[in-house]
Image 1 (cartoon, one colour):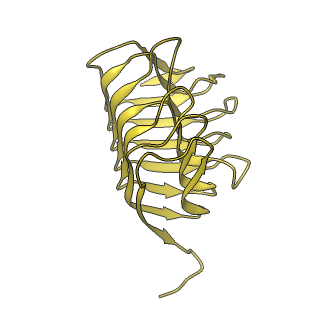
Image 2: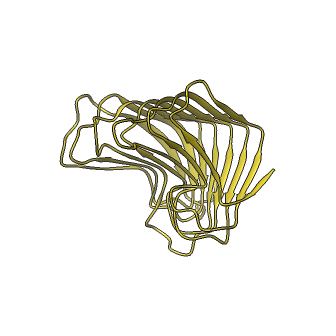
Image 3: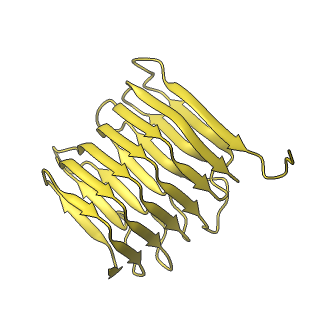
Amino acid sequence: MLVGRGLGIFQTRGAKLTNNYIEGTGASQPGLVYIQKASELVLISGNTIKRIGTAAGPALKAIMHNSGMPGRLIIESNHIESATDGNLIDLESVQDVTVASNELVFMGPTPGVFAGVKARATERDLEGLLVTGNRALGPLKSLVDLSATPFKIGSVSVIGNLSRGVGKGMTCATTGGALKPIVFASLERDPGHKS
């Protein structure tokens, strides 16, 4: 159990963060769990990650640092929850990342602005992103939000996710363009529909 400001993984190869309870109660803008620089082969699995009572920001973030950018990450089977404003999972200039079978719960004060998974191409092309089998709950703007500015979006697949109370399954804004088609299929459940 870790309660406090969060946990950082910095320029690490072959790390596992599994089966932990991590709760953010202090100000931590980089992310409650953050992965920086040229970290690769990192597995984040089976954790409960809760961002409560802290400054706005993501619950989990992978971000570049000077010359190094994270890649080859697996984020799977976690319960990620936030009661503050910010994306639940925030990925910046990453490559070869799998986000699978997570439960993403947003309870922040500002509805319709943030994403379950936000992926940006700010320092290099966004390549090899797989987002599959996740469940998102709460008033998010979208389950997945892609942004290619100024670099491009490469191979991205967003398949088999389920959302309730979320605005859209996927949104995409780009000035950099796309290198390949984005594969997208999702089920968005309307809580007002009775079958």
